[in-house]
Length: 209
Image (cartoon, rainbow, N blue to C red; front, side, top):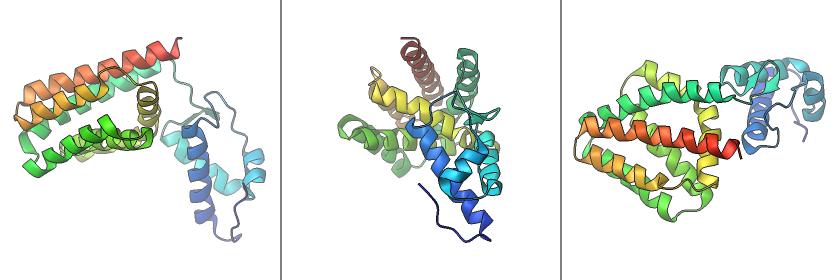
């Protein structure tokens, strides 16, 4: 796939190169451990190496490329990432119970419904929206930015738990929703933390098979 770009439009080339590489990584076309060779990718996409370098820097910032290779997280890496998520999203669930408006809480239930009846793609999207809406309820820009920077890595985990149909995934979402709806911040936080621990354990189990 070659990009048809003006030679002086480096920013556009970098953005398009970034999006293409990111999609290839998230789709599994470029699996974990794949070496990223600037010259090869530049030739494939029909651009110079300058925008490729820029796109790689952005992917490194997101954690998808590490030392010029597609990320292949170790068990320790996974536990570290989930440790951050458990702390931040647990607190966010407590905030959601305290601060979300009733109509915003009902949006969470719509995501639960999609999780029970939607296609794989719809379930993935609803799963992401469920967690993102809760994170934003923290109203803490530092926490929100931290999770945003991890979104690409988080996507890989979510994709696994959805594709492999993790048991009780949607049931746990509904329990979190019910705790938030009841304005029980302590329970919402506890349930979110347990939910993410279950995600991690399931991911590790699948990865070790």
